[in-house]
Length: 93
Image (cartoon, rainbow, N blue to C red; front, side, top):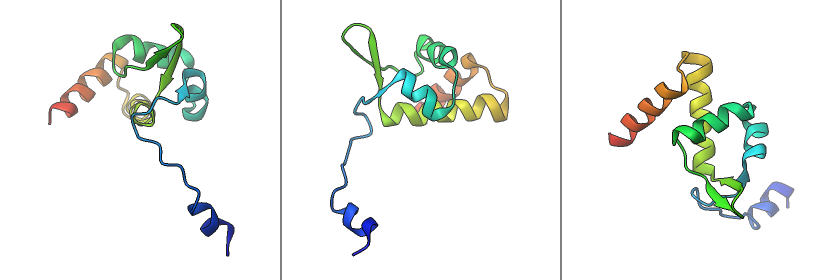
């Protein structure tokens, strides 16, 4: 039995909205500067779960939104306020 087949038996199913990523890890994984993620949080584009009054945790869904925001900034030249408008419009559709 190949390792990949064996590991499929031990997959962990984590819901998309389960907060598991600290902000600093999200920045590293998505290659985003901390200040950019901080501004996105400040604008309310995503709402992290706050743990212990200071530690903010992001879900897989939040990570996908951040990755989309990065695409909009880098490839389309959209600023953070514009990203907020775009995401709000897409939520309404």
